[in-house]
Image (tube, rainbow, N blue to C red; front, side, top):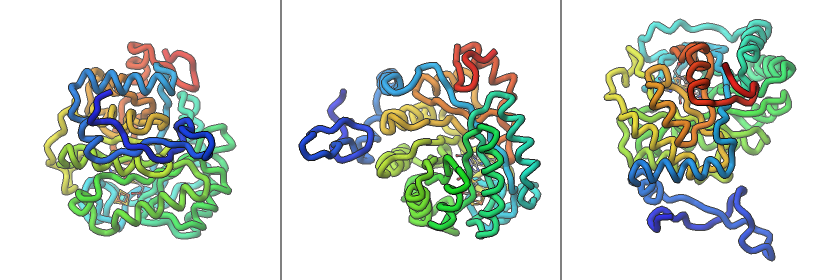
Amino acid sequence: MNAPVHPIHIQRRDAAPADASCGHAHVERWSVEQIEALFDLPFNDLILRAQAVHREHFAPNQVELATLLSIKTGGCPEDCGYCPQSVHYDTGVDATKLMDVEAVAAAARTAKEHGATRFCMGAAWRAPKDRDIEAVSAIVREVKSLGLEACCTLGMLSETQAASLKDAGLDYYNHNLDTAPEAYGRIISTRDYQDRLNTLGHVRNAGINVCSGGIVGMGETRKERAGLVAQLANLEPYPESVPINELVRVEGTPLADEKPLDPLEFVRTIAVARITMPLARVRLSAGRQQMSEAVQALCFLAGANSVFYGEKLLTTGNPDVEKDRALFEKLGVTTAASQHIG
Ligand code: SAM
Ligand code: DTB
Ligand code: SF4
């Protein structure tokens, strides 16, 4: 291993105890500079290292399939500069009410039939009201009864709301840090970084698995990408699930004309997430529809082992199920649900 990217040692849950007598696990923490040094490695060295970490902890050819459903679309009061669901931007997305339990269950059943093992439900709220949490809890119970893992992303949560969702059986809560702290103010003005960290704390304390990642391709620098990964990797413990989204540039949003990120820089971001969060599911999330198969294959090589599966993300498109199956078949990728997709 290269000297500049050696982590400093602190406590984390996934390392063997260095000193059994004190009962503490001495583990790694990553500085932004160390993560930048990873980003700066020659591409082949970076990918080889990420692949080695990946093989230590996961079946090398297995990818998790998670299907997304927008259970409450549009009309959101926040001003996230990337988001088609904000009321601040004219994107043609109509606001809807929360879907009813039966409609969500029907979509979850279809997702399961297609091979998904996780069902993720998104709502365009700044923060749900307590009565929304009651309604979503009923939905979560139904999804769980189908034998699927349930994930929700509903905005900011209070401690008691997180506890209610845990009671309903929620497995994961998605709340993204989105970008580095220093870049955050350029993208969102209606809530701050600490609000996001607080919600992640409430989710963690409730005993729900944390799903948190970000978006790249929003005009950030490499140092800022490293800053995002550092924030995630230094959470104690780091998230169980880390979605890396490539910005989907939506007409009407402030980021509609952002210059696309170099695809190899996206692959590097996946690799760096894998190396710094060895036990996390790293999800190759939004942006796959715009991505070539070759770049997706490189993302899997770099340690991505989860994707969103199904024709739609929340409001934008995702590759067709048939197209994904053909890609997995070509790559010899298997999923948790079926041994070999074909
Ligand atoms: N309203 C909730 C919130 O923001 O926490 C949940 C839904 S929100 C749409 C979930 C995540 O989707 C955002 O945090 C962001 O990371 C991602 N997202 C939204 N629009 C996107 C876009 N155009 N491209 C890539 N990712 C996007
Ligand atoms: C995440 O990190 N990406 C997903 C999910 N979590 C909720 C959302 C992607 C949204 C892409 C834009 C859209 O379809 O509206
Ligand atoms: Fe609202 Fe979430 Fe979109 Fe931000 S990302 S505008 S909070 S739906």
